[in-house]
Structure formats: C-alpha cells, structure tokens
Image 1: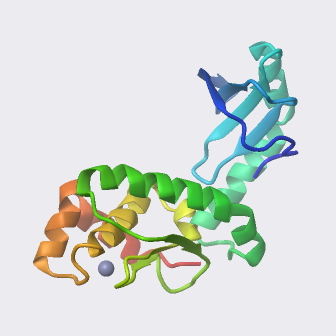
Image 2 (image 1 turned 180 degrees about the vertical axis):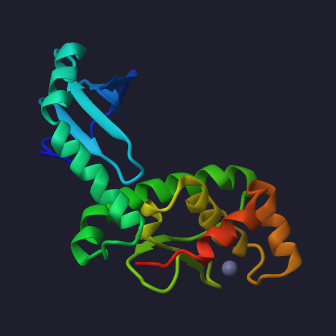
Length: 198
Ligand SMILES: [Zn+2]
C-alpha cells in the first residue's frame, strides 16, 4: 500500500540505507526520477521511503515521523491479515497482484538458476483452494496470497511448483528435488498445513 503513488517504474539507484526512527525501521531509497517523497509499507512489514535525489535524508526522517500513525496502522492491518483475522477481498487482490507477480517471478528465476527447468507461463491468481499448481503443459500458477506468507513459506511453495516441472507427482524423487533448495521443507509443510488460505 502506498500513499500517493505518483511515479511508476522508477529505477532504484545505489543509495539504499536502513534507518530506525522511534521503533519504526525503514529503508531509504533515492530515485533519480522521483518527484515526491513516497512511503510504502509491504505485507512482510518492510517500510520503504523513496526520496527524490534533491531531498536530504534527514527530511525523510521527519516525513516518517509525520506518517507514524499511518505506518503503524498499515503494519497492524497486514498482521491481522496474516493471522487470518481479516478476509482478503477482491480489492486486496487488485491492489497486490502486481507486487505478487513481480516477487514470484523473481523467486522462480532465482531458484531456477539452480534447477534450470523450462516453463511457459507464470500466472498469479486469486484462489481459496491452493497456494500454487503446475500444469502438464509447463505453466506455473500461484496464489497472490503468497505475499502474506513468510519468505520461507513462500519460497517453499515456489520451489515445490518449480520441481513439478520435472516430476509431476509427489514421489520420493520429487521431494528429493525440493529438499535440495529447501532443506527444512518438512517444518514448512507442517506450518502451511495449519494455515488456511483466506
Ligand atoms: Zn505438489
């Protein structure tokens, strides 16, 4: 969730720095083409402040202070969603699907450096029944709600579907493949079993 999103597709420049202000940890990014200060809070709790080049970092700190209540509210909302206290809606899907697609595509590419399987299309959907699936044609489907899992759980789902490209079953060979990149998969499987898809 961002407060006003005014410029899209900004290139991230070198200067990232982590700061803490009164208990709120955030990362500062300076963007060449940013025209305004922009604050984003992500489902995993990350707070990112984007600054135009000409704005000094201490001004960013003031801005974070000013927006303190708003930030805490966003974080609290995400926590409630993670705990299953809020049902995700169509609006949540529309708001988050692009972020989910970006993240999932990146993680698929990351793990596929290791596996080197070939796949056709990655789809991000809003479903209540599955975290991910893999078709016989080599298409990978993922639930956008992966955004609300922990990074470890998310990676497990991604690796699981990726490995189905090679083994479209749950055989021992399949699990051996998954384990190569997710050694603690048993633990994560257990966690996911108790987690319902909202
Ligand atoms: Zn499976």
